[in-house]
Length: 258
Image (cartoon, rainbow, N blue to C red; front, side, top):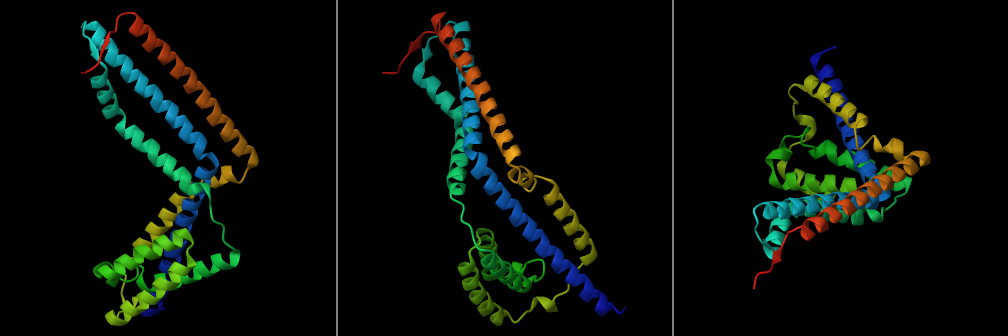
């Protein structure tokens, strides 16, 4: 087999693995959305209980330190301190709530439309995938178009992909460089790296969520597990409330800024 024929075979294998990698990454993203759709509210409630416990523990520590030193507790200063300490947790909670909202109404598409999206994505990727055509990385317009292609592909937005294909063809006519004309250095190493990446995606979360989502018994078991954990943290939260109340009754004195 001559070098040209071997290079064509390697390039075909490389392209095939690139598309397979992108496919399983998209599937993993979809399993994550389905997982959040199924369990997101319980997971968010559990996280809310956890950070409520963290907040109360910080308040107890703050008040205990004041009692130990015989100081008055300025309620506004304490609130500012607690708010600052909890800001990152609160942001995480807000992000989780936003993700829940996004995943609440999942759009479904027909098998025919799914096939069209897959074919159009591959058609575009053969032209401007950065791993196949180095012109993309060096061209700001193509780079932005590729990001938009990936976003549309993951959103299953066929209309957006069709519009992007028209724009991409126009830009490529100006550059005059085809992906088929470019060499891919270290292609065998890149093939191995893609094989490893695909295996990692398939064997880890969120792709592994599919095995829970496909089993009604496991879905029920997961919900029961989350509900039980919420109950445990609710009880712990009440215990912390009692400790804080007891601490105040034993000597913590509060004052407010005028």
